[in-house]
Length: 342
Image (cartoon, rainbow, N blue to C red):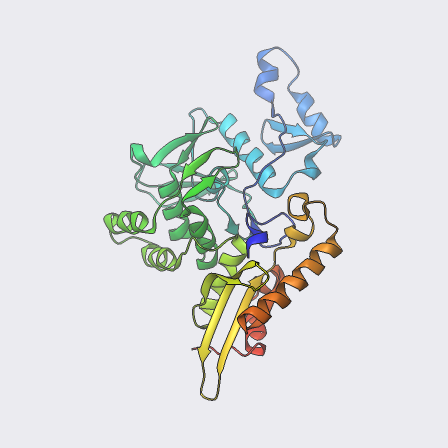
């Protein structure tokens, strides 16, 4: 649905994006030691509640911490890890997703993901998950002064290691023609064909089958992480695949685009159904309200829905995040709307 374009907000439980606004400077004990100051002052500030400890020897000022989004807090933990490593680390997996602005389904992890070029299994230590794998020069790039796995490599790693719904949300976003990163720079997305070629070149390995399924299912026409999540749930519930981003032209000159459309021929009837995921952001964020009150937005949506129903001759099903996150709820809603699993 066009008005919900963009990433999910912090108000959407279970879906995390990488839109970042806040910034807090790190305070390192080693910096205090270098200038002869008392490094133990950081411990005292944490005990007094004036600072937040991110890891041993690294704190940030507590003022403003609670106002940060979860992804911003996670980025600070990443920076704290980088500041305490002897060599510059390579961020990977969910940590790389933060820098690339890729959404995931679920909360951002507590541990920071790093990649090292050695053929060993992953292990976790001191808040860091180490992934040991072969890294080529093309697999590592720099974003905001931090080494990170390339977009191709990040998407492949997420496809291999994260659950289907999360992998699809990341892939739908990462395979768009252009990506706007959290630092506002614009980069080209990755094609499904390139991902499948790289997956095939790597040969059989853990997670390859799951990655193939997620990449093959991905579709960059999904307009938001919530739509990607919904489409994945629809698939897992065995409903027929919907048409995406279908536009209807009304007699009064409006062109209305809907997220999903089904035309399902059943034994006794043909069901024509439209589906729309409603993200909460368009009812709360200023860039979506555009000077309107929430009541005005809701009323405009009702007028639009009535217009689409009249123009298309279809029924309409709408749902929010709490339904998209629960397969049983979305299944019940679509069954009630007349759709049947195949």
